Image (tube, rainbow, N blue to C red; front, side, top):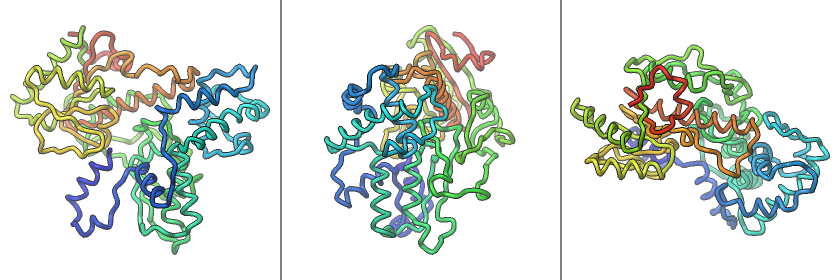
Length: 417
């Protein structure tokens, strides 16, 4: 959905003739479009719909392995798909750093049949995951040669793309085309990673050694908000997108303002009433409500706030998934934590930061191992980090009932109402 916002802003910089020469697309959408043009007959399937196929495949798991069912989908996602593994031999050699469950080579050999069966079931149904589809697109490009007209590719939100995505991007402008320089421009910040993708670019044919730059000056977020957000990830290892570690050392914001405010309430009704009053005060102070966004963790929660605030006379505008935000449209902006990424507002209200909501309670298909739980929590921390840093001036954070333990990191700023 970020592509829609980027394209809309790009129109302000480029003439219509120049825009005709630029594609602005989500990479998954580009893959689907490209494969259809080349007679690809598979349907893409996403994680939310793979449960039945996993269950059938897990039924073939060898007995006596002492491996929980939830292990297999996570091993598939974090090891096999992440490293582009397609054969048992590749799996035997694969690195499993960060996975708590230790596997010997004989065990890996035995359980490979589960992954093989899962992929075979999808193939039989004419389905493929997006990672496999990206690999297929790359192979088509390799076989057909230099068939695309792109001269340069700009990649945004690089931290949320996987290895196959970057291998494909490299192939979209193959190095054989006159050794083009500066044909890839990649922007990413692992502090804002909200999906389970970690990539070493050099392993994808993209050499950034000696060519990467760190942008350490923040021109949008106030220093007070930046410090609040950074504390969420304090002590957590954050990679630099090429095998090393990054830190916030030397980073600073040039703007200053109020520290983020945290308010905790006994009930949803009390929280919403406070938010409505808070908005009225902003409006009385001359703030355009169009520049304020209320952020919640899920779409269902967002609908609850939309209804409750409208009942209290607050006009709202839902920032939709695949449509660019229209800043001329009236109303308080409403967006999920994922949707708000890439946007910015004068004021941000992050609501319902309750335990079990932020971080969102793990699903039953989740891996219960400590490394998976920790990684999941870090992704949730990054979501809150991203949400808070959308604000240019001020952040209000609210909760009701039991507050998230993330807010306990800033206990001195909490105000129980």
